[in-house]
Length: 233
Image (cartoon, rainbow, N blue to C red):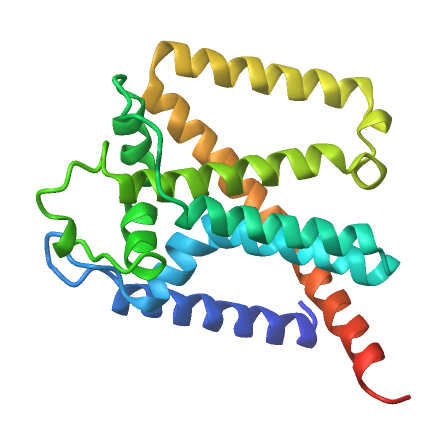
């Protein structure tokens, strides 16, 4: 192994070790896991693979494209994205409570994200929610409405980027693989909802990690364009 590679490996292992210690130190306050997560765990373990990924990174991607192309439509798109997110979160809830088990299933998969978001975005701690029916609460339904908008917009935004992702240029073999994974995933949900949820969570996490280089590039482009416009030559 070359010397530079040894140095990089050592630094990488040190960073992984430091991250593990920070996650350990920032874990739940109670021994039984009932306490609130620490700031580090909340940011990187809860928000980064969820809200930051689908809302902040999506907004950064839209802004980077608008700056790069000097597109008025791009700026309008970003404004609409932000306004819709704010309205979804803060407008009063007018929908009737659901009579199905869907809210309970959602809560089981997004419990920690929901508690963290209710605290940080809407100013209601876990203690304040004691005695609240989280499946019918207007406060919770507003949060769920925002999450539904953020996730749906993120998915549709990527499917619409045909010139970037080149969906029409995907090989037949890859299309067969994608179709097979999709059918298998739906089948898992049909057989056992929990297994299907865990399987899709694994695919989702892989998607989040693989997209980091693109997110990094988006922020670099935003910084570069802002420096070019704001700083004198």
